[in-house]
Image 1 (cartoon, helix red, strand yellow):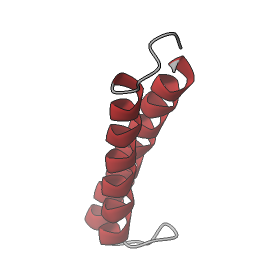
Image 2 (spheres, helix red, strand yellow):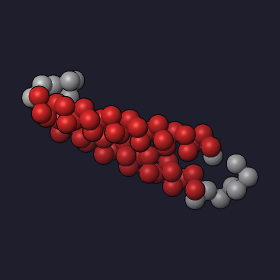
Image 3 (cartoon, one colour):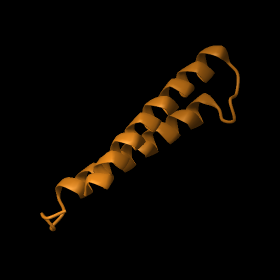
Image 4 (cartoon, helix red, strand yellow):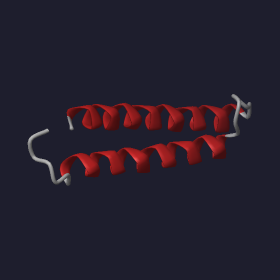
Length: 65
């Protein structure tokens, strides 16, 4: 279970990085592989996945892990 908690934290950090990239791309009007709105969608999807991993960690039936 600890691995999933660490993975959840890593995915949250990646989500924040994607949100920062979205802001940079939107402000500078350049494309860094994706457009600003696409970076924001990536950020949202990563955040949802991180929440899922966190919930999966805390709501698991096996209390010994």
